[in-house]
Length: 220
Ligand code: AMP
Image (cartoon, rainbow, N blue to C red; front, side, top):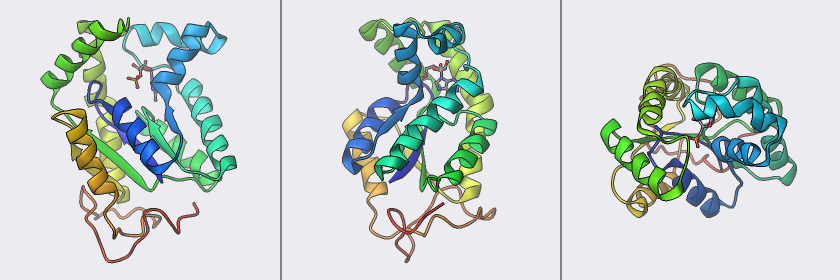
């Protein structure tokens, strides 16, 4: 399973990504967690990323691209797939990750999009900020991150729809309800072979088809 997960902040993507990764036995590569780890440890990368993170802005592409490239190469060496959480967040990052992944035969099979409306996302993030003391989760930062999501990340979802690998799932409800919805879609027994070239006329969500292919057969 090679999956990228795209969702607005507050959609619970970290929880869902971890569960999907556990279910399919693949590493969970979360750019936000990796960056927070660097910040905690005070590495040069963490120092370079911190100001952007605290402001609710994106850290420079080069930093995340190198981090993800390294994690993907590890997954490749281990002979497994991945669940990529928090990347790509822009069209430029989507192009970069495709280039990196294609270079090592690791392009995604599925782009999973979790849908949650803004007010629900804000409510959840404020609750999480209180519970986890996350300094990047004040209300003004949360609103800025949501605005950024609509402006620059949402177009990435359209890009994956055009590529024919988008699976869009309702992200409202409890974490368990969302997981059940997601796994139902990911475990559909029959899928189109997803490693075909981009099909511009494909619909926004992938429907089951007669040819299996989600877990097998794709080498690029
Ligand atoms: P997350 O935990 O995924 O919400 O990410 C937390 C913060 O890390 C974001 O608000 C960004 O500042 C930074 N970040 C995570 N992923 C990326 C990315 N793909 N590109 C740029 N910045 C990122």
